Length: 103
Image (tube, rainbow, N blue to C red):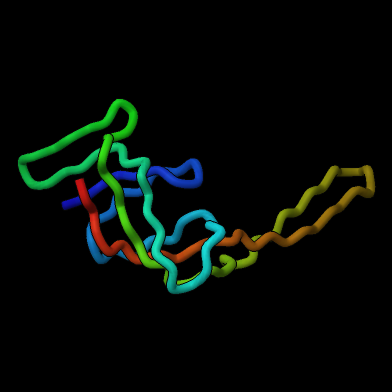
């Protein structure tokens, strides 16, 4: 059984047991989180699609870790104007493991 759910402005396709890196949530490690914005559920021949979301369905997950991604460098430069800016960025994320898909 696979499900497509939405969180943090992005959509994720998951099945039970998957580990997914999602946008940072305000939860601590070891907590359980439920996603109720489920767009679709596919179970073999049975497929259900919401308009836009399915009622009475949810995806539950355990929070494994909160962290930051690898550093990227943002470099701005304008030629002949003596303008250079170098800035680093690390995107925060929440690592979750999908435990159940109900609905």
